[in-house]
Image (cartoon, rainbow, N blue to C red):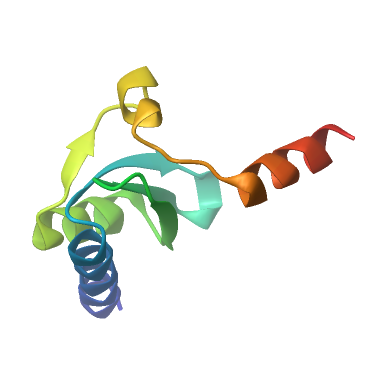
Length: 95
């Protein structure tokens, strides 16, 4: 399962990177659920994928040639473009 899952995730990461002029990412451990791969495109677009483990997430990112960051720090966050949709969602969470 891991090899098949790793390959599928690598294809999705590569497609995101191609569509957005390149990308960087960060992997966050989610506990029993696995790991979240946060993707930030060079154009400011962002997305995420969930892998069954940190090892699978890391292998998929490496297979796709994704540059990984240790943390979702201010520099990476500054690359993210947010629009009205995101602001409405964030405001809704606060209500």
